[in-house]
Image (cartoon, rainbow, N blue to C red):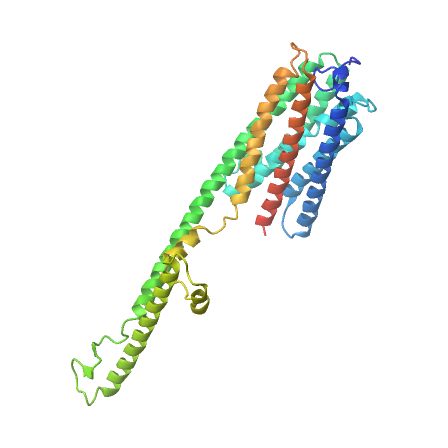
Length: 374
């Protein structure tokens, strides 16, 4: 490798040294973020180990996040972009490139756990040997290309091939993860609709039973002024008295419910409701009230946050693809030497930012998937 070349694409090391101060600020900032990611992943891993559930896949995801954070932190703290030139080029290249397969492998394992949630038909890719083989093959391919890049001429072409394969694999995983999350959303929505319909049916049955309890338990027509419409007054007097007492209790309950309903309506419709009246009465809302039905529909969805973060993860994967294609065209193009080193610096900053956000979302999804097992 030429002494004037950087290990990062087709950028001259002299051009990189012109931004030395900015690169150090960039390096220390993102190294701190990576250390934070490592700490978060370690804490989550400890909590998973304390749980009594099978979390091998989830612990593997957190382990990959720890490895990613350590590799990025070492790369940015020791010899960022070969500015110090204190490490061998092969070591710097390994620290730079072997962190990327940690993210793609973690995304593949997260997608496998979501397949289990959606009860998708078991695919060959879901088998443990296939998963481990895919992860190992990705790491091995990156390592071989890095060795060739350092020791053989034509490094820009090889880096272009390496980045193209990684970018394409990331796109496939991101699109597949988006489809999986969408299927999970549809299943969850159908399940919640079923629960809502069941709850409404129960409320209607409860209302019908309560309305039926307000009628006379004996199928007689009561004459409240002194007797019934038929029968002997001398022999049916105890029955008539008991029926009259039941009717009086029913009437009192109906009047009480009507008063409470009117008070609730007055407090609801009034533009300036009386707080004293509200505190004194505390009239309960009927169980079949439309307000109760509406609040049932607004119960918190336990999977809502997970699906939002999953969509963000898919979006970050697509953003990585777009940024990777841009980097291949502009900064790893062997036919076009890099002249805009500031643009290259912005490109590296965007890459580090997306990688950190990607790691945080993957670590969060693994943790939430673990809590769903409890």
